Image (cartoon, rainbow, N blue to C red):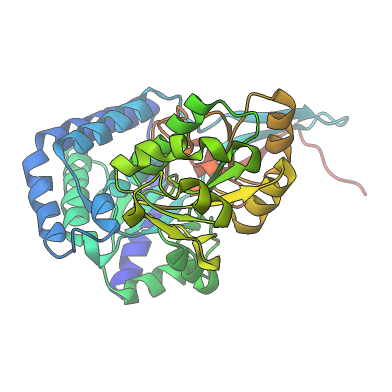
Length: 416
């Protein structure tokens, strides 16, 4: 019953939120950004409670951890959202029919957005800022690992909302248990869409059990193909950045694909990885090229399980191919359709790769680490959609809207 009351309150809040003007929305978001920076110590104290319960070697530890720098970055992302134009009320198309009837297609909020996510408390800020700016109430279902952090963040946001006399039910945090997840997945009369953000297991569970429509934000199994005509310096730097910048996030590199003709360059491409103790699972040809040129304790023969794995840690696979077509085939088989890259100086090869690879984001001579709403100029993101209906890639403000048709006339009636 408590969950139903929370859902009903969110629906009521969404209706009132839809009537707020853009100036008020922006002032609230700026106040949330300011308050986040002012409350750093309180947020970090709550985060420390969560971190104390997690093994430091767990790949999720880095995702869970907040720092003063990360909180400053979160506040900066919120301010970027403020700087963006409102996605609401945009005229998407307009026609006048022969009978004089004017039909206008305009962008509108979903209404109530449910988000289920794991140990990433920054998501609480991201989801609220994007939903609030796009006129949506949000219902958050975080994991038990981050419940103290999420509770502190949502309490802060609600305090700001109340200070503006805005219904705090615009953002609701559900209990951390599984019962709340089941209730949210079945809230067909209250929630317009659910967006899962986390592991493939979480995403599959939500997709298989939800009665509410789902937008999938997929796990990242990301590849970089170093082509026969790839630039060595670019390739080395791109591979190092994509693998080691933040190995626990979904846009990090999981598999380097290398053309057989460039195996002699593999030790140089891998050299910086050794400085970060990256464990490499290499196929036979790549293993031979790296043996004696890469620390033995960080080099292992690849197994079938090495490919198609999202490592979320300092591990990666290496696959050797004879052609671009073989590289495309390997990506097609193992990709999660999140982010894929090619390193090549041949524009025809690059164009072929861009056209053939089925992924939300395809990069040419760029690190996959850029798959991020802020990096795409979206302010923040609610997730990276790997599906093809409604939204694909980083989900920003426009992806949190639907549309409706407004029909205006002067007494027209339909005779047939």
